[in-house]
Length: 250
Image 1: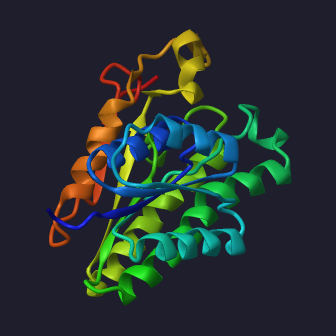
Image 2 (image 1 turned 180 degrees about the vertical axis):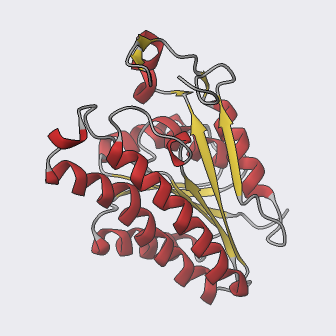
């Protein structure tokens, strides 16, 4: 039997993070799951059906001390780290840009961008020093990393920035056998996208329902990226509901 691989998944208390954490565990990973809500993390762990250990670590990814604690506990429990899925993220209200508060902007940047940076830092430190050396980081981008939705400036700006972070991690870490890729997801069916089935604002100002896809397709995509040998990498992958209004003019 090959040795158990170790993963950290942020934003694992719901949605895509929960689904990916469970998918990784089903594939034989021991998984450290992180999120702000301890009760939701416990719920994720309780859904798991046997398999390797799942370690729940309540974490605020905007807080450097909290992030350091997450990775220290992961290393203490499992001895190494093979995969980080940088998934934690947040939205701002869909209001005109000029009506957003500084606090709303700052929170989106802190969670979506700074949190991913802080987690990547700690992952790289472990991956560089362990034996065998190396590992993989997968950043959760978004369709918004390619094109904005109306009234989504903070989210869109941070997801464009994630693309730059992904490229920089790939460049700066490849000498240490660390691969970094990005998955851009469009309309996975989770609680965060329920409103899309009822109707969301389009580029022309109309409100229209949008198709969604089963979150399992996201899990399968992340697993494909994760299973590659470190000599190969998916730099960018987009997985989306086929009929969502992503390509074309709106």
